[in-house]
Image 1 (tube, rainbow, N blue to C red):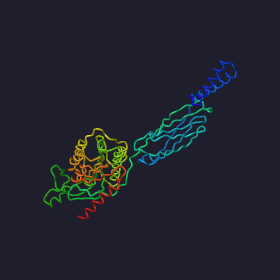
Image 2 (cartoon, helix red, strand yellow):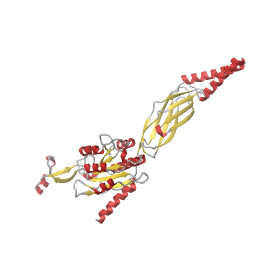
Image 3 (cartoon, one colour):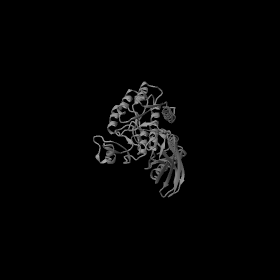
Image 4 (cartoon, rainbow, N blue to C red):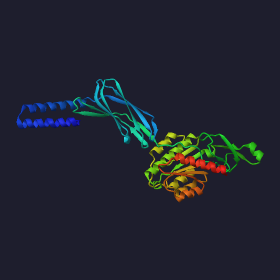
Length: 392
């Protein structure tokens, strides 16, 4: 196709031919014909001289958090028998922008390296490429473009904050408390404690020496300790958030607590939309879900909580929300029997009455505005609990 320069010169050629017809001057005919021939040759050269090019791309790192930078190193290989001249290499990265490189001359069977950096904001999943090669003839009259079959995936995780410490949580036995998780593998069979037999228990786990000593059946507790389990429930109701900034703060809060639990050995799950929860042992899957999560216009959070009662495994409950309301309070009441400890992380600038009701119901609450820090609020919560426990 013709470039802007090519269209300009084609207009000049037509004007010269018109002047030749009108005035009969042979110079106008010669000039118009010469330009027309040059344009035709340029178009033929670019049309039948398609480059044989391949591009390989390396992203480092492939998984980044919002606000980080990713480096992209590309190698352009000229596979043809002729030199590649006057070429322009363009790499698109979705909404994050494009990188453009000029290749003056690339001999046959050789390669050229190009690199650029991407500021990864906002969160999401982006396609890097496919690259486009644009070759222009030496006169700049015509060009041809070729899309290369090469694309990569860039996942931008939500921004996270480093949380420290754990609120004191209650275990399955109400007399048991813990301020740190018991480390064990998901679904592990490590011996934990003894408890009295309950109807329906597997008799294979009866601990006969203790049963004889106590004169009652005692069962070996062969499961992950209660206090090292957790469920992070992310409220996606659009009505719960004052603005998109508040929702993004909620996303970052969910991502921060998920990473904190994963690093600390919790057997935890995340619900952030969909029919199923995702275990934090699949950390990349959890973060990818949070990378693309969005608010939902119509979401019955109580129905979600009912499903969690059927499939959940108890432990600590972390509710990430915006403005706490009575529906969230009902969710807490539904799950309180199975999840003995509840932490509510609210991304809001208001102090709704439902948040106070949650506190009276035994939930621990932290509330931050979009400009505040989850890490500071979390640390204040844990420190306040420790001080309260020491004073008691």
